[in-house]
Length: 109
Image (cartoon, rainbow, N blue to C red; front, side):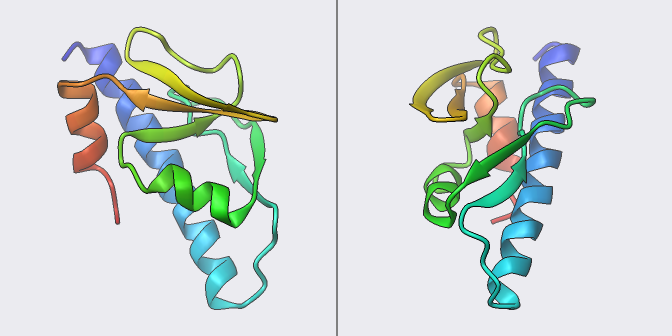
């Protein structure tokens, strides 16, 4: 895997971890905001865009460790494919091989 693809994958994994923590806090304190505000899980380390997802939508994305929720236009076709389109966000899937393997290795669930 080239250095850029690795960096993109690590950035996405970092944002996914942040969103898992937000979701977990909502569940633990029984104040589930629905929809909840999460950070765009795109590969840009400087992206601060927010997405609004219902808790069930977030869980649906997280069922597959190679899936990430990103703002439309933030997808990176050289390392991922859009597999779902929703109002306000798209779900991308990491390409098979090293991008998908990195996503699976960094999954905290």
